[in-house]
Image (cartoon, rainbow, N blue to C red; front, side, top):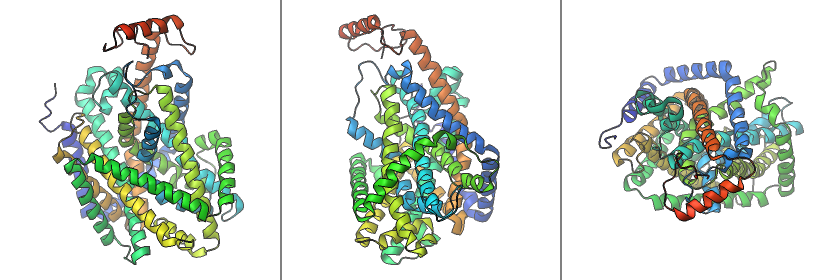
Length: 532
């Protein structure tokens, strides 16, 4: 039995590791930026193929689970019911996984691909079409498959096997009780490191866009000093929430954010080129699905233009999603108790992909269309482009204000949630981690975000990209092991229960009779009637 009054080894080692990076980045920012840039380039040049294959295999495994008898298993005990209504659950799935990235890249990414497409001539109709397809490719099935497999494994072992909510515990079928020792500590430290870098990248992106919004609305300068002030103010706000435990307040802010996002989306849909948006959305969906397998495995070894583009975009995204997956996975697992594996996988893959398609069709089509008639937008940095686009549309100040509020609240809620997840991961999986631990992680999280911006200088986004790619590499090994471990245990349970694609009527009848006679039995593998 762990003594939860003592600091866990995971907290000690992970905080020391992060603190070393913060000090190194503060004292020698240029050197830190050079080292991370070199390491990131080495990983993308050497292991780009690995990132592409890994994420695609995770998608294929997720599809296998939908049609496999394993999909009948429940993320919980046979009598467990979902804690949240389906609509609320679906909304939480999406809001947890994207947040700031949608607002930041909503218009800027399609514009960037329009200017520098992966495999066609810039600023052409073909480039426009390719820009939309590429953007949806980055925000579609691939990231959600990564999030889903981490969340699925966590939920399965936590709610069905009564394990602590730690990533290391999901590997018990492979390593046995060694996950309770130093090996488990190493795995959890890797997950904490990936989480803090993934969230810090998101906060860095959010800081850049908040600064751009303030510059547009109030003519406040865009520089590292203002970005430090932004991070400082937002840190105070989310630390107050983390200390006071105002979960209702965060839930309230999350609901406001979803409302603001919907309001901004609908407004832009009608203000922008509505018919073109609908046409581009339809065509983009078909193009995305039609080229899905080709693009999933394409690393363009003989085409320099696309190879360079993949390193700057797709491989960076796969790294960001992998580093973000412990944070999102823990959250999604927490809200998915009582769902069947099949229901879980279908929802996690399909719903966010459809919403992303709608979001980027509206923002991307409007953005490129406006930029075509205003060349100055094309030369602006990504964090400024959205506000410049709004400036060319009716209700520009209103739209920009909503976008600024949206990014700011995403910043606060993401950071607050991250302090909880990091606190839980470094407090033996405690669902009520000590406030002091959460505060420490909140401070370190903000410091890492600032260091990444500081080391990047004018190329702050490049430093953020490097951090995501580097942190994802070691954690990708953990994801592979989690997938194998989950399948090993779930498949054994499937065999034990005799689950097939078509229902075994006799076994189902025995199961229902058992549940009626013993409604509160804590079923496990030894209980031969535990079917779902």
